[in-house]
Length: 333
Ligand code: ARG
Image (cartoon, rainbow, N blue to C red; front, side, top):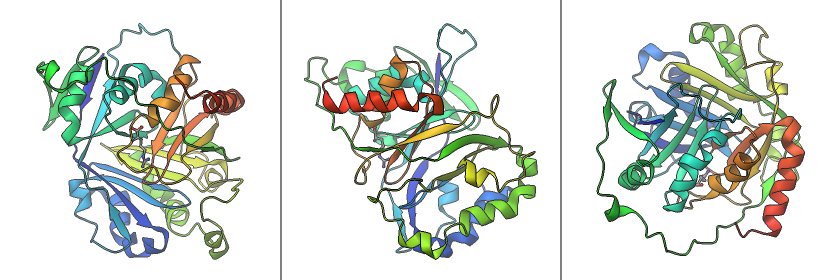
């Protein structure tokens, strides 16, 4: 299998709920006016806490510094696994489940913090630029690694492995088991031909910028027993659009333009984290994706500025809940 280090240098940002009005102008440009920006990697996710924006340096230039903007200090690089045709794996599962053993687990073992962004098309594993040599040495046994430079894939040469890998013998740090929240909404993961983006523009503007009524705002503070959670994600990455929304938001869009894989599967969410997770802790994605991989349950995984979110097929939510409860009683593995 091949692993590509994509040619995007990314920033992870949060915009406060009340500060969004200050950014509608640049966000509209980034979402709808592709020809006016050089941004190639853009993702915007609304959660009850804030808006998370992940975007490349070209896109970042569009956002003016402000008290409403929180910028994570690091540059993040997206990794992407490309299975080159040989369907050697027996697994039918999609998403982060496919890469749990080969990518997520080894990185966690080497204490590399990741930031996940699953889309309709693929799963991006973001790693800090400064961790790149550890990332390469941890994964070069399993993958042919390529670095994309100006549209070309350049093979990454073998590293001096011994220098940066953690000694095998080091006792594994007991990972923190974070509380999870399982809201009631059903989600769908969809895509759209970029050429038809103008046809859903007004709906998208409505959902993104005008969705929360003042009443909702007042009770959106995290920690309350939310039955349903506000979660909407739009991404436009290398010309591909991906949308994650609940069925209520979906009803607002014209039915014929958005498409989803197979017969419109629905997903349930597991939100990971009781208080904001920060960016330095590692092993959170591993903790969730490992058991899913063992049970061969597909999952999308979306990290946001404050929390992580796994989406699992709705028919599996009961077994996933059981699994997580079990993990909480015996957090040994
Ligand atoms: N860094 C975590 C890990 O390596 C995942 C991201 C959690 N943080 C966040 N802000 N969503 O598993």
